[in-house]
Length: 512
Ligand SMILES: Nc1ncnc2c1ncn2[C@@H]1O[C@H](COP(=O)(O)OP(=O)(O)O)[C@@H](O)[C@H]1O
Ligand SMILES: O=P(O)(O)OC[C@H](O)CO
Image 1 (cartoon, rainbow, N blue to C red):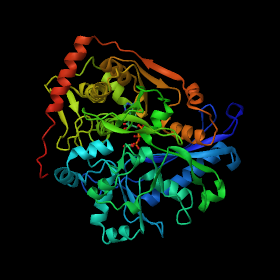
Image 2: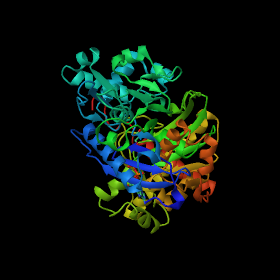
Image 3: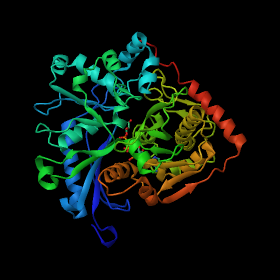
Image 4: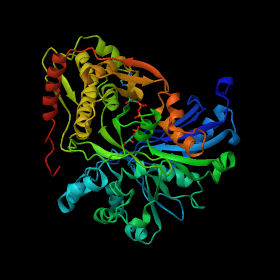
């Protein structure tokens, strides 16, 4: 697959995502040379529970790396480094001696720790977690998931305290296996992934002893926290060892931080939003740890080698692309995701309907697990085409709420929004977004910004690229949407949206 335009050497990146694992090989201009991808099973043992089989994931990771290298028609000597990006918060515990997971991984969307988080809130108080970790106490994050495993799997706490078990998010699992597993695998994570556990102190970039104790996670099972761009070890052992042994494993970033990096949002105030199953908007806040009073998360954007960490504010939305899937799979109103645009374009507006998809509560800026979805404003006039509009508008309004919160917290007005992810192929949605934000929306040439960010960080770590300026030079605009909506309509519609959001709250009673 390589040609004269994509002469080596190359950098490879693994994206261990929620629904699939993929590997992409990039050239020096940040162009894609080859891709391989494999989905894994989504396991739903009970309502609200979501698990992954980590052994299946590791098998898939090995296959997609081998697959991408084969498709590129290159060998070990052509690849200067490999980087990792991953679904964040998804939590695994495994035996350091056998390498076997003790339980399926508990996925970020899983809400089984809701009650535990409420209890921690009552006993320890929300404020301390916010202040030290930048996060609200919520089932989304990794620490409570690890505590749940220790409390609910027989004998686990004793084994953890004896030092026989390792904790990790998916970056840690993949790096440990890539670098040899039971034969000396490196047990590390990076600052961005660690900043999603509720266990890392944002100010020191170390595990916080008191917080680990309050949550009930023994520190001896935690990985070493490293920067996002440095060599953690080399590929070793197994089939990949034979194929790619010795290649430096040189970056790790949570997928949303990787997208920030891949979008080259290196300056304070630069913001990206990734539109997939859920949506994650992240703003670079430079060296400032901005405490959010508006329901955002304070998190680490990235850290290159021994440079100072760069912080970020994040607004996470649980349901965006998955609402389009719901319209397709559960309602049968469309047969492909792309059809939502055609259907929505068959009418002028939403016909008065507003759809708030609080299917598993509301994430940012509300963090309400008692909320459930509503369609408000229904009359006999509303058709499925109006609902299609309301579905797309839901994504755009949720983004607007987060943009408002970011401006409030940071004092920075959004100058433009860089977007990526599967939903950005929807032109009507992108125009609606520009209209509701009253700011330009820009999509880059390389839409695979997540893998690209991991490749960039790995490339910086081994000197393949010299500086972030080299990376900026690779960024190219593919499309831009500018606002066309008048202020009066925008304000009126926003009010109606906010009214609909209010109606989702308090649907579940506390004991539910
Ligand atoms: N044309 C479209 N319009 C609206 N939504 C879309 C469109 N194409 C894909 N999607 C949605 O985008 C999501 C897939 O995007 P992707 O970036 O691959 O997600 P993820 O990385 O979270 O798996 C799906 O939820 C799908 O419903
Ligand atoms: O794998 P994705 O793209 O669904 O990303 C999941 C996020 O990292 C969850 O925080």
